[in-house]
Image 1 (cartoon, helix red, strand yellow):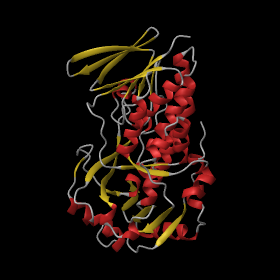
Image 2 (cartoon, rainbow, N blue to C red; image 1 turned 180 degrees about the vertical axis):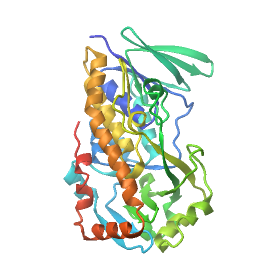
Image 3 (cartoon, rainbow, N blue to C red; image 1 turned 90 degrees about the vertical axis):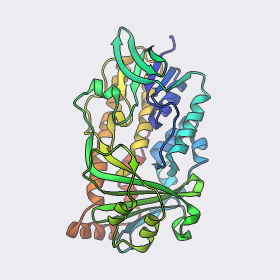
Image 4 (cartoon, helix red, strand yellow; image 1 turned 60 degrees about the horizontal axis):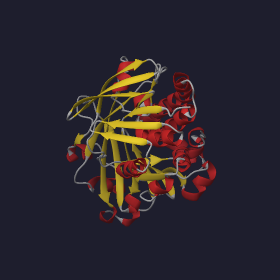
Length: 392
């Protein structure tokens, strides 16, 4: 059988992982990315056992883990009182329960590790500075129209994978009605050197402070040398950019009356970036003919289960499994979609549910906190065993 040629639009976490997985499945991969240089803004990412098992299977886990932290515990805290609501051990105990480690890493470090692996694979061609303008399915494949600094270029492949994110060019062609949904929230992100914070707040623990209408997540990155912060607040300014420099005083106003440890975290960064939060309603159809979607292009979700990157990594592994040795590429892509769509839709819905739970106010918030205090330590992670225990 001749080698299958697969084009991937987008060199984010999902696109890079898909390139590695498809190359290992015997495909010749061309990865096209509009950016001239791959770089990620200062933000962390959590990878649960379902993602790290995939990275191990692809042979890149150790490269990723070199820059990561494996939290020893997680804690859910009352943002105002500072008291513990829930939590439990992570580390070796979580790995034993779910068959893979949970780790936290700076997104730029994750992307750099995957990119380094991609550059070592002869079967992968990386085209930076090439923007996908349009594509045309044709007999036996698809033709891509690319724009670059020197003009335009046409690329032919047996299949096209749209891993080009929330505002996907590929999805806009396949599903023009599937517009991003504004979540009426903003995520404010920053990283600070660990040495600038009290030692009690720089241990290898993932912390979630929840309060009325807002929350704060903190965890170490850069092998423990920095702390990643994500503050989520109400926001009605849908029009502001995908990310932009933020007004620090505006952020801190949302957290008046919060406990001293949370305020110490929030006061530390001099510079924050603000993201408007968008997601997608679950799509029933991801592709057509030799074209399909992957990652945020197919199932962008709110960050409240920390599963966006993990689900893209899962997509990549399943896509490669279905395409390996496939005689009929469109049929293989439909099998991939059938395997992935129900699961990713469930994760999307669950993440939206956590949006509501995290930000309860009044009596509903008090009831939530009471339930969290009395539940067994194992309940929080066990509730999502269906996510973490996934196997390809």
